[in-house]
Length: 254
Image (tube, rainbow, N blue to C red):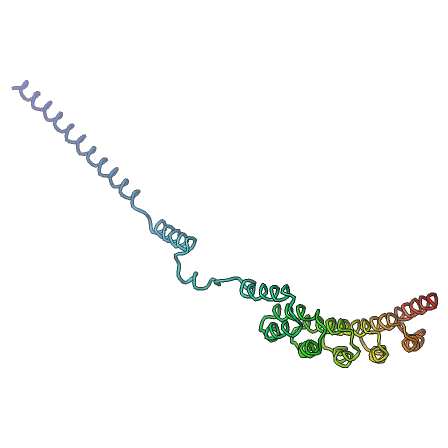
């Protein structure tokens, strides 16, 4: 009887131990599987990062229609490259002054300043009364570079009558246009030009006065020497120095 009780007790211990071990293993497996499931599932932060990356890829590949619509179709310099080539072609054709003017005159009112400038340069090499009138109209161009180019082009016509048209540019709002007009008049070496430049010797802008002095010295007429002599004692040292140098050079030449 005691032996039987001992056997039953031993069997109970064995069965209880097996049950405890089985339960613990099952719980460990469940916990492990739960951890794996949470690791495989992306977090909200990972989802957001993935979405941002997807949007960037589309932008780079050009799949975003809003960005494409904001991109200019052609760069600005290509908008008028064809017209520039056409102007060069007309210039290379060696047409008559009248034909060249008729071809290029519409370009003088083009909205692009670079085309207006190209047209002025193309027609300025011709000497013709109609060409002169066309250039005179361009003296009122809103772009100062074009106005300066026009006054230089008018002096190339070597016609004293152009001084009357160039003279207003001596008082242009733009300094570079004024200086260009000074030297355009000096190129014509006219007595009328001397009087036009002499009026600038009392200008408030020192650069204008200095250029007027140099231009009068370039003309070298007796009348211009008279005006320069009056500046020997000018309050501006640079004026005095330039006048002295010009008068000394002229004295050596004579």
